[in-house]
Length: 234
Image 1 (tube, rainbow, N blue to C red):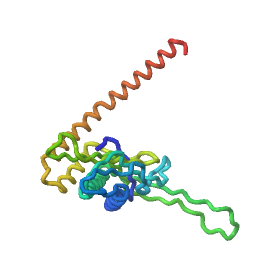
Image 2 (cartoon, rainbow, N blue to C red):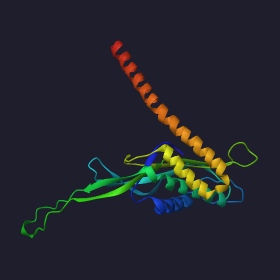
Image 3 (cartoon, rainbow, N blue to C red):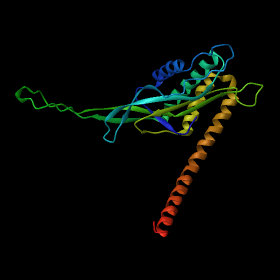
Image 4 (cartoon, rainbow, N blue to C red):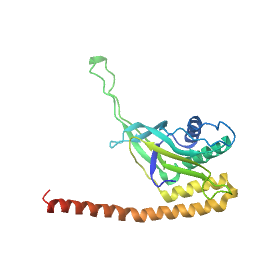
């Protein structure tokens, strides 16, 4: 799972997100042509649907939520469906909890041309509120058998949203949300899932610690570069 997020808006969550994901992925990820043949998905960007984003004036705007599968390899329909099911469940789980926040929106009136005495009352501003959610923008599922040390099958997904970001996203909380779903789906692998949750939350904490230092380092390098330009007379 990635540490960055993507907006899914107020309507493309829950059952709608899971069913849309499953349907699209089964379209771009074909069944193997023969038993045991390694198969991959189409690698282009596909539109899942439209999510609502709020601009600076809190006006709703529709934008495309996209998905791409840059790297996948599976050798049966059962494994493909397993990967798709895990991805849909994990993505849906991440678009919940503290990653969702209620926001007010405003739709300005549509002003009509002047029409004389036949005009009705002036249009009113529409106002309301909805819950807007973010989900993890990157997922990587890997399957290991008892023979090879490296993964024998895998499924990587990347999500995107064209308009921008808004709302809240917690890497640590998202790891926990996804972990709860995986424990319910695959209780026989509880030891591996719990270890993965601990490792993921440690990675989130490390990123939270390092990001300010990295940004500060970039700022220092930028200031040094400007100083060199001044000293050299450029």
